[in-house]
Image (tube, rainbow, N blue to C red; front, top):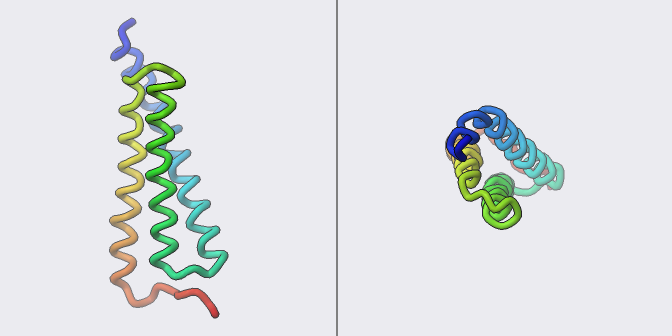
Length: 103
């Protein structure tokens, strides 16, 4: 079995895991930032940063620890979740009903 065949065979499982990991970590960061009543722009920045950091970790693991650069393309899936959040956040910032933190 070639590397490409292995990727195609496991793509759905690996993508589901990557998306789940990224969404859960971003949601955790979002909720912790909201818990501490940070301004919405900071909440969005923290959440996006967590999504982007996961991309770096995925690339590091694929290239150095696993020594399988073909797995690095899974990091693109994580990038999609981070960008999707950013599109959502930009729309939310344009709305007037975003609650600001309590003093």
